[in-house]
Length: 86
Image (cartoon, rainbow, N blue to C red):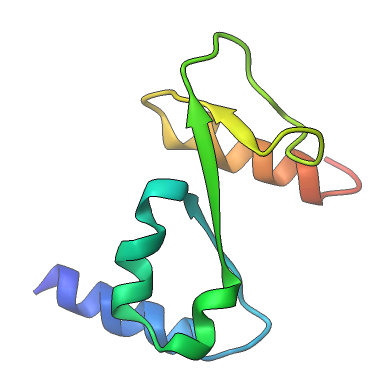
């Protein structure tokens, strides 16, 4: 039930063309399978590898450090890359 509700709400959210979904690169095909094709270009998959240091500038290299914590692996690099002031 939860997964079905998540897919419905994700599709509804991405129907707003100003919304973008940042995710791990490996999840892009899954998200494409549950949302309309006109939303595909707003899914941004970010690669990761087993580096020891965090990459906080996705503009210089589109990879993050593979970590168990989603906040440090994906959220912080995205925020540091797109924000002007933190």
